[in-house]
Structures are given as structure tokens and as C-alpha cells.
Length: 193
Image (cartoon, rainbow, N blue to C red; front, side, top):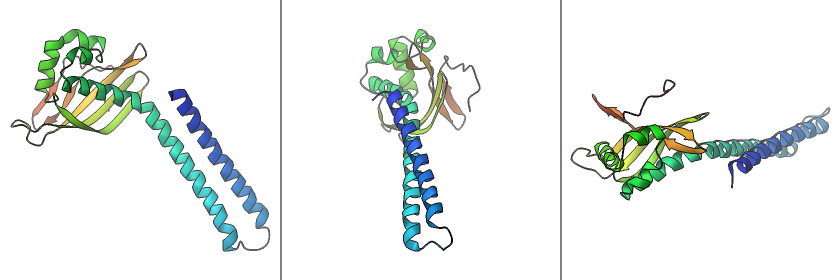
């Protein structure tokens, strides 16, 4: 399903919610002229209102997920390519600037230095999308080692959209104490949030 059809579905859900709310309020005004509303008359109104709110929230969440999914898919494809030791495929997911700095061997050394060579899972802490820029903050579960006993890394990943596809523009490991590592391609055009 394309992003346009998802967006149309979310808009249709929102319009349905508004229509249900308007219909419910009009019905409540017609049925409660001079007397108090009985519980049997209030429950259907509350049910319709609750269903309308639930449909609106569902549509909004679906729209937000559809807008941010391409960012996470790109990062997940990169981690899968690195775990499979397919650095040519991983390079294909890098921006032109980032790709120019790292050939396949240099990318292997970079991912080893960042301890992201064997990512087992990923939790997205934050996702931001602004026009042709995107930012991901991820907590990666990797194979525990002597240098990384917890097996968890927090990584900040700026992405840019080039030729219709999202590309990783840099990898930045969240500092642990005084240590942190930033790839040389990391030169954002705007301040990071």
C-alpha cells in the first residue's frame, strides 16, 4: 500500500470521526428538548463519541507511522547488510557524501569501531522527519563483548532524501562518559534537536 493511499485512509477516518460527532450531537439536541436524558439515551451518544475518537486516533497514528516508516526501513536494511557482512549493499544505503568517505573496507572498520557489526534488534527511541531530512535515535541490541558488556548502544542517525530514497548521512554513537564517536560526514545543515 502506497503512502498516498495510507494518507487518504487516514483522512477518510478523520472525516468519518467528525461526521459521527456531528450526527451524535444533532441527535442529542433533537432528543433532549425539555426533559432530562435517560441513561438509555446517553449511552448510545457516549458510545458513538468514543468510537469516533478511537477512529480518529487510529487514523492519526496510522498516518504518522506511514510517514516515518521509510526512515526506519532504511536504517534496518543498513544494519541487516552490515550483519550479513555485505558492505557493498550497506554502501548503497549511504548518502553520496558519506559514501565518498568510506569504501567497503573503511565501512567495515567504522561499523566495527561503533560496535554495530552484529545488531540483533533495534528499538526506535525517537524519529523526526523534516522535509528532506530525517533523524533517528535508536537503541541497538548487539552481541555483548568485553568492550560492551551490556550489548546495548544508543546511536543517532541523520538521514537525507536523495533521488526519492532515504540515505544514511552519518552515524553518531551517543557518548558514554567522555567517549563518543562521530563520523566525519556528520555536518548537519541545521542544528539537531
